[in-house]
Image: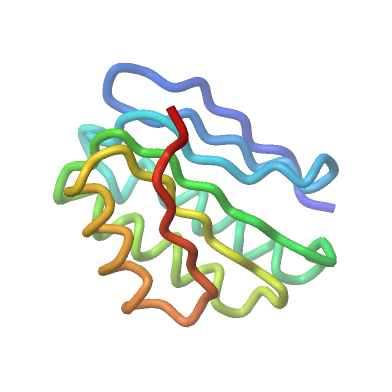
Length: 121
């Protein structure tokens, strides 16, 4: 079993919870860290370890209200890390058109079942 990652969100970084025991895989908030690749690298590595003993189902939820261009590349790396994990689904929750479009672009870039859905108000 891999360790739990639980990072509190800040003004510039999303809250990230990766908790296989409870089946919680979430990215929430704003993503504009100083060095996006450094920030997301432990997450990519975590999924690299998780794939060796994944849950029966893995649902990864992204609820990002803002994401800068450096974070977009890092997010693609995270999404690519999900590809070898069986029975994985990404749920991309948006509340504006830019985030919706980004989710649709990501869905085309990766080989993971992807659901782009509007946030319920």
